[in-house]
Amino acid sequence: MRLERRQPSGREKDEASIQLLEKLREQLYSSNISTIRQTAFHLSWMQEDGLDILREALLGNTPRRAKSAAAYGLRKMRGRMRTRAEETLVEGTAHQDPATAQISRNALSVLKKGKRAGKRPGRPGDRGKKFEIREVPGKERPRRQPQPKDRRPDDHTPTRRH
Image 1: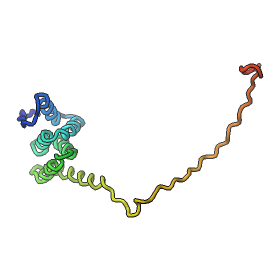
Image 2: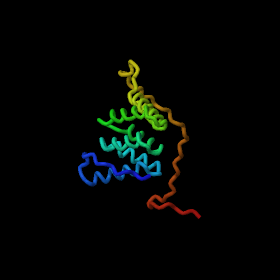
Image 3: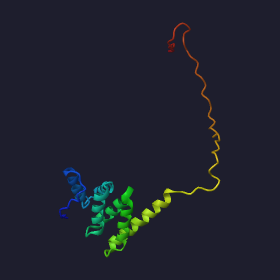
């Protein structure tokens, strides 16, 4: 798939960051799903620029594996971009492409499950309890009998028997 050249947003600090974003954008449309997912994860750490590229991949006319990887990257967004990533996924649920809508719904359901699993409410009264330490009984094994030492009294070498 041939991509159009990405317009720099102005947030890039130097030519190296522009090249890196361009490389990651191309890798997002690769044929290797492992590379695509790793790229989406790397883009999730790149704040606005990563969000722009992932949003383009999810909502644009792209292959399904690129869309699902973009949804994965949006799920992994952290910090101040997390709410904007969730808004993008919500926007994707109303997309005219059924694959995009389904991928976005799945990503949102995974996000909701992750939020609930993170905080487990404790039972009342568990706070003050201490763990009871019990001794675990060991297995009864027969003890080895010490072998008699067959040594000369003045020498420390064992005697030979023929």
